[in-house]
Amino acid sequence: MATPLDDGSWEFRGTRLRFPVRIGEASAACATYLAATSRARELVAGTGLEPVSVAGRTPLFLLVVDYRVNDLGVYDEVGVALPVRHRGRTGLHIHQLPVTTEFTMEAGRALWGLPKWLARIELAVDGRDASCRLADVDGTHVLTAALRTLPLRLPCTVPGTVTALAPHDGAVLASTVRARVGGIRAGLGGARLVLGSGHPMADELRALRLPRRPVATVIADRVSFEMDAAREVPR
Image 1 (cartoon, rainbow, N blue to C red):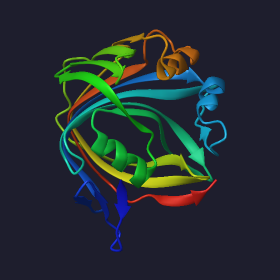
Image 2 (spheres, rainbow, N blue to C red):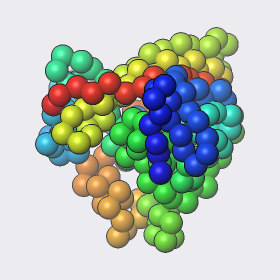
Image 3 (spheres, rainbow, N blue to C red):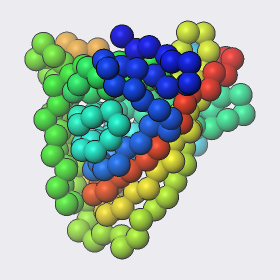
Image 4 (cartoon, rainbow, N blue to C red):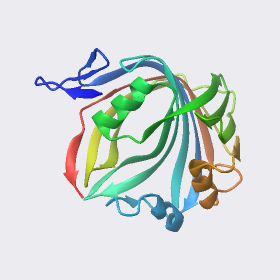
């Protein structure tokens, strides 16, 4: 159980977490698809969020992350996210977020309203290549993905700030994330995605009718970030 404490920190399974929660070392890969906004809107129906749309299309991000040093422990993660607007604010809505440990699942749900659920993830991020096989804890195949970028790597570290927007108990939780990303490689269309059958996440992605190839792939050797406490915003 997650227990809030009087000083604003939280206790999980004997571990106290304070804000900002820090992720010190991770590697990540992302494939960006363009989904029809009409279908992306179904993912956030009833939440008060509206997908960002350009010419009837909304970017949909398939993310894989290997967390090695951070306040929530060592674990792997797969995410499906899209940019959204809410009450004049633009942010990132993480719609699916399977993870490999119960600790981060409980912390993510309680602290930020993130839709984390327990899964089996086989993940490798190595240079210009990344691969992932995601299955539910009962072994049901969800997806298999392979990403590839161009070999050239940016020589600089890129800072950035994003607001995570998560529907939760009749409100929306807004959480600020400050990140630094290094060892970045990028490519066009370099990904292959195979969806399983008989699993809600796979069926949901299939219903989006994503194009066969993404518009871009990005792999980052080094990712670190801080995540502030969530602020509740009425829907």
